[in-house]
Amino acid sequence: MSMETVRERMMKLFIENIGKFYTVNDIIAILSLDLKPFEVYRHIEHIAKSIKSKTNGKIIIVMQPPRCRKCGYIFRDLRKPRKPSKCPKCKSEWIKPPSFGAIIK
Picture 1 (cartoon, one colour):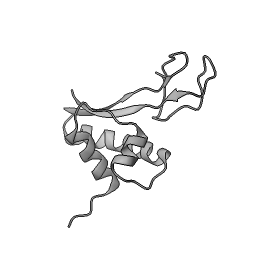
Picture 2 (cartoon, rainbow, N blue to C red):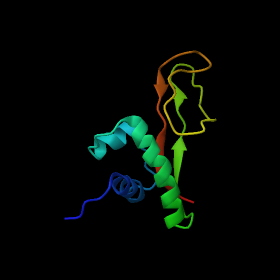
Picture 3 (cartoon, rainbow, N blue to C red):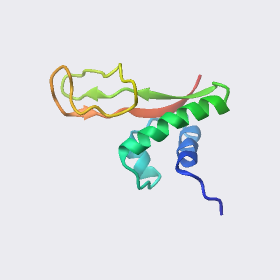
Picture 4 (cartoon, rainbow, N blue to C red):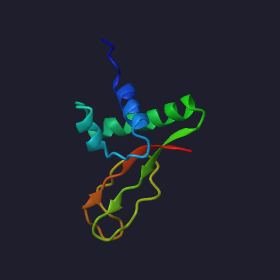
């Protein structure tokens, strides 16, 4: 019985489901992870680099940015993947979190 690391399990989820996007909460639920969302965001950053390197840039992880569910504002300029706490435009805290998926480039 092989014991895969969290990153290996997440990488497998992305690669086996090309084109499907997952929020951090989806990933935690699907893989039954005992991690906080910020920890999963950190893993995703690393996995994105690993997948790109291992596939010579043929498969990449992309982020659908978070969006305000009240006014529709899209958070396009995030330096790191995360779920913002509130909208800079309307101040709503009703934010749709980012989702992540692997695509073939």
